[in-house]
Amino acid sequence: MIHFDNVTKVYANQNRPALDHVSVDVDKGEFVFLVGPSGSGKSTFLRLVLKEERPDSGAIHVAGKDLARLSNFKIPHLRRRIGCVFQDFRLLPNKNVYENVAFALEVIGKPRRFIRKVVPEVVELVGLEGKAHRMPDELSGGEQQRVAMARAFVNRPMILLADEPTGNIDPATSIGIMKVLDRINRTGTTVVMATHDAAIVDSMRKRVVELEDGKIVRDQSRGVYGQAY
Amino acid sequence: MRANFIFSEVWIGLRRNLTMTIAVIVTVAIGMALLGVGLMINSQISTMKDFWSDKVEISVFLCKKNDPFPQCKGSGGVNEPERAALRAQIEAMPQVQKVDFEDAATAYANYREQFKNDTVMLSVVQPGDMPESFRVKLKDPDSYAAVIEALKGAPGVSNVVNQKEILEKFFGLLEKLRWAALVVAIILVFAATLLIGNTVRLSAYNRRRETGIMRLVGASNLYIQLPFVMEGVIAGLIGGVVAAVLLIVSKVFLFDGVQLYLANNSPLTWETVASVISLTMIFGVLICVLASFVTLRRYLRV
Image (cartoon, rainbow over all chains, first blue to last red; front, side, top):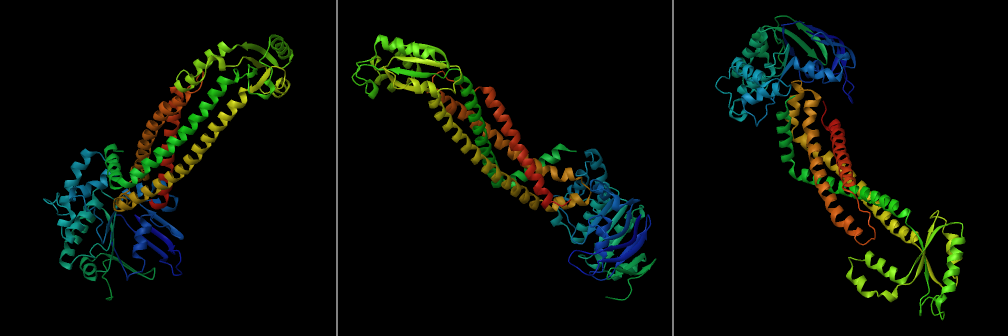
């Protein structure tokens, strides 16, 4: 599903590469934690998958497509197959829960009938039934992140990328978020989650890929976070 | 593509940037109006030139009694032999196509016709003030120099006037006006381009959250950019409509007004005005689209 082959990325004005000859394979339906300290290259990895950045060397395949050969014109189509969740939720403050989720479908031109059918289903899947008409500022952080997950998942992506989705949320609420991610993973969606949260990684017992200074230092199935940072 | 989504986005954008939108509309309107005026003067010049080119004559005015012209001093007016001699001399010239004699009464009638809308000009001139003249039509209006040279100072001639020179002074003035209008129009078009760029930039900044999410969920570039470009286009179109009104007003009050003072007027046709309006409108919208696209390329990374 995601295939990195000897990928190196150096940002302009920096000597040290953000990713240094990274090779990794993520299969369809896998759940992968991407761990490592700040600046270890986790976010760069996710940005490369979305083709928001281009690697300096190496090849990246996502959903069977060679990103180097993917024309700019086709990037939106790649992104329609990838859902994204962030630490800061990125909801539209002037739209309610339903409208926030529907927005993701409106802007890719889905018919209204389809939107009316699938949005309530996804809002229910993330556990927000009955709150569809709340505004984001009327929701807790955990609930806002559920909205963001609903928006990421509503188009049934093949891959869900989560960049520290529990970073702004207390540990008790984080468990609920992880349950939603697990539920999404069980529908067959590949999930890649970058995180600092040792407790979550340890409790989930999923594959762990650890990055340090842009290099993969550990790739372990059913792993734990490792030594505390 | 969902049109109502795009249009609601456009409407929100225009309303949020109302002051900038108004600035764009005003600049585009004035810029396009001046461009249009320039084009209209241009076509006015060419219709007038067409109209006059086969009518320009050399007027050979003859001495009256007590004429103040030095050549006429003490002659007591032109007499019959002088008239006949002049006519023969003119007709013998190879450049001359046709000669007509205009007596004082005809001259006065023509004068009344020419200034029929101007009571002051009519009241100050009496039939006795009008000189007799030969109206000389040349085969080639440009070969006037030798003719004028030969006739100036001939006995009985008070003055020789080349209408072409008078017209050329008038055309020269019109041409200066045209250049002035076009130069100001170019400056305003430049200002409008920058303003549109700024408006689109503000708009893109205001909506960076939305566009960020649109990018993330895979909205196509067209879908993301179209609302911004449409904002520019709509502002440009409104500006174009205002410019069209200004052009129609200037045609009715300025161009037609000037024509009242010219004999045998050759007014601008409405077809010319319509084509000038559509040309400026297309040009205005094109500028808006280009400015929007160039700005988006810089401020809305897709």
